Length: 497
Image (cartoon, rainbow, N blue to C red; front, side, top):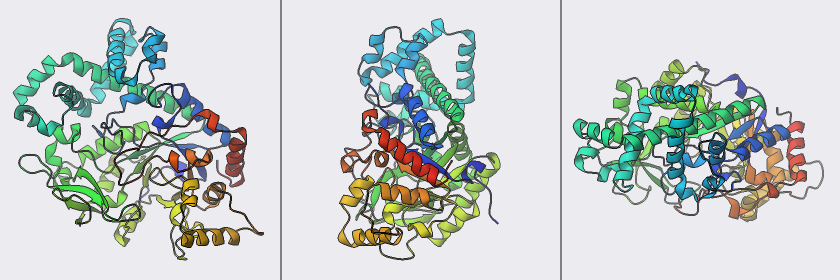
């Protein structure tokens, strides 16, 4: 019997735009939760889009990948708006907000000092309440980050044994010695959550729903693994024995070796999947819709020996996805989930997704192989789906079309000809955008790059590569009034509200 694990907002036809927070225009190193985020909500409202999809908003490592975070719970401090803190009187000089992003940690520390002195009692109480509510992850995360700084940003597995193995006496002493640093980290998270929830509330007034994304796995060098190593497949010395990834596929002939630790599902089941439920509860508070990245890993995940350099040699190992989703549903009956079901999908994965009635993903750039049963062809897309021209892992649609081989190009152009009553000259990316919006899928998501008609130099990520990713940003000068009118008309014409 199908379970209802999605909210009513996914039952009607909607359009949305994919844009990460980091890709917003900004005077700083990266986009943030300031005025430009609110302006983007206004843009979505103006064109009739009711969904804003982002990538994971957790705190990344130095490579800035949102899929390798220092915590499954903590928000990315880079997204904090310094201008908003200035308007609160917590950063007093405009020059404070003009410095390089490398100084943001110091600025937030200064804001904390000002907060202690100037904040009203109501705000002070709100901070205290936040720390208490989020203590189940925040206490360990704040200590983890403070220790990481103490040990020159090295991974926890390289720390002195007493810190690595969480000796109780050692950690108690560390909490005393690093009390100020810990308080600043807690305050930073308080500011992030406060600014995020303010943006979410504003979006709601504009009928815009926030659509988030969680990586199925967490990074080895994370507060989660350090604090609860028993929940992960580690050896006696807390080293990874196996790592996560996917076998060779569309994106890479050697597969993708992500390097994340695998879950110890038996340990997670023993406490009713408490860590997962806490994680999903946090995401459900921040977002109206949550995508589970690599959903197929909840049915079976590709395990690679840690000694292997690539993902070619591995094996599928079963996971308790049914039990996990049942536990999430019971604890969070109103959570709204989407399954990222791309890659090697088996009947068992489809059965799991369908049991919980979760929308799957359809990528139009994958549709034109020539096979009539290709599940990504517009005519094969079902209502309970989220359709995309491409995702953050794909090339922009303009770049995709330029780089099509003759086989795919021929199939794509023949498909266009068959759906138009007269001779049609390809108009890219408009044709693929219109195809997505006209499909049966209840939710259609268009990457901002496609609305702006941008080429491959503007893609967000190239899977299997470790540099040059996650840096793309747009500016409003790239968006013409004609482009804005065109997408608004397309959304209205396809009855998406």
